[in-house]
Image (tube, one colour):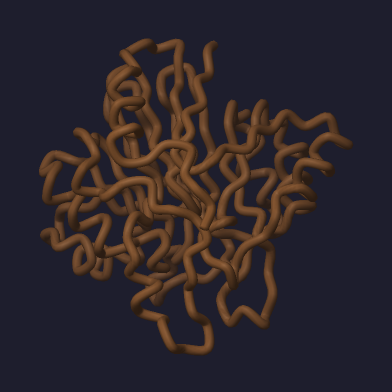
Amino acid sequence: MIKAYLKDQDLLTDISQVHPDPDQLSIWWLGQSGYLIYWNGKRIILDPYLSESLSIKYKDTDKPHVRMSEKVIDPGKLPHIDFLTSSHSHTDHLDPDTISVLIKNNPAIRFIIPESIRNLACQRGQCAGYFPYGLDAGESFVEGDISFIALPAAHESLDKDDAGKHLYLGYILRLGAWTLYHSGDTVLYPGMVEWIKPYAPDVMFLPINGSDPGRKVAGNMNASEAVYLAAQTGAKLTIPGHYHLFEFNSAEPEEFVSLAAAQGLPIRLLEHGERLNLKL
């Protein structure tokens, strides 16, 4: 079991030590594709999975979700959360045991989802049908100097529902002068660079676990593809994710590190529960 950099009360203490500053961005990796972002007094959680629901669900099946890393915190212990996202319906991005607790404890939270999964998101979040803010590719949610812009994702194809709305999304986050891109789960697809490049992201969060039909789950970019996307879009910093959670669906980050170095690509690997501070 991979130990967390910080967890439980130590993590809460670390979160409490960050103070509002529009020129500073603080990022904690919560595991898989989950991140806690703190900016200027606001806390944003992206695609959190903070439970054992998948390990329980798939125990004694042909794809057991054996956890590789410690859980960093119980979602019920997290401090006030202002924004919560889910990029698609898979449980490691839309976990009922995580999002329902966050919504219950933060009744004013803004819950950003693909419009195509509204009914499921409300069911798992135990919230009213009107509660989430549903987006489709090209649409945005704006509140003051914070905005979420939805971009298509392909997990493993650009699938849509019967109404023509995308089932998988990535999000551009604009936090004052900062711009972030969280891809959700996705492979590279034609036109992806063109969607992202105009936003000139300061930080990109990309999966690197790749695609293997033997896993019997939808795949993602591998290390080479993640480096290509970051280089082509001019990302100032790339943080890899979607590894070191489940044994059957992971990758080691060394290839990503090596390929990024060859490209001169700025990257940062985080441990679970580790904080990264960035300044303008």
